[in-house]
Length: 107
Length: 123
Image (cartoon, rainbow over all chains, first blue to last red; front, side, top):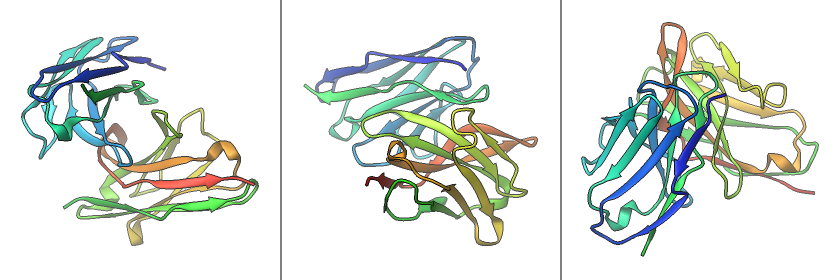
């Protein structure tokens, strides 16, 4: 199975900050990488697929980049509604696997 | 609008059976795959398996094969996840999520998710 490793596991940030989360795959996954946001008590929500394509309805403050094994999710200006846990997922191969999550907390 | 509606929370005892459901609407249910994912308390996401609603082709994660059964009834746009004998370690939130078809295979990218079904197993 492909292992997905996110860093950091958690971070504290202030409203208005630019935040970057990293995801590393244990082998080349091209651009078959998705990002999800999960708020407490809620289902995950798709943000980005294909490493950099925004899912319909997702605001442009979210952006993704990378290919191969190293990927990033950036939130350009953190807002109160963005405090959540973020997961990356590879979908190039069976079985699909997720990172362990990065929790973005209020500083 | 695409929507996946899951059945309500369940409280069960070890050894009991259970079947939970996921009903799709707002899209052509038979042309998509439905995946099931587990989230244990305070933990991350694990993919369990997936079914193609059109012909009920299924694929299971090796970690869950033989532990659960995934099925679908395209006549009512509904997929199911079932256990024949629950264990306390099955306590978790279970999500269904939609995946596009790519020439007879799932893409494994999950674009829309159900709200989750909490399953609690305790004696």
